[in-house]
Length: 94
Image 1 (tube, one colour):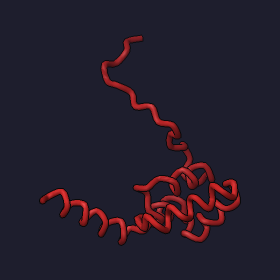
Image 2 (cartoon, rainbow, N blue to C red):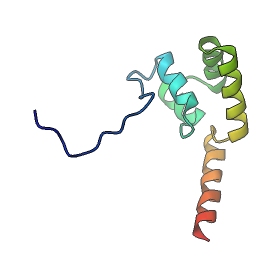
Image 3 (tube, rainbow, N blue to C red):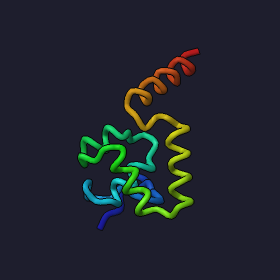
Image 4 (cartoon, rainbow, N blue to C red):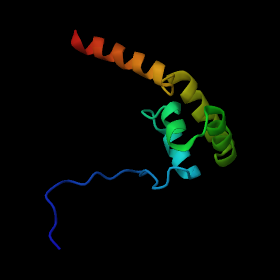
């Protein structure tokens, strides 16, 4: 078998295959670039459902860390995410 010349990116936590699995929801919730709206579009799980899944499947300290991160970053919502992107674009133009 011929090896390709393209480098392969190795990811510590690759994206799970099934969208409706708890593994995918947890993976998407930790990802900064995936908003709660996108999670809802793919899985029909609201933000409150995602929080319940995270609380049930993570250790207490990991859940607290995730909640702190989500509330401070405030880019887990599409509206806030797009406004943050606009701010970044403005900073980069100068």
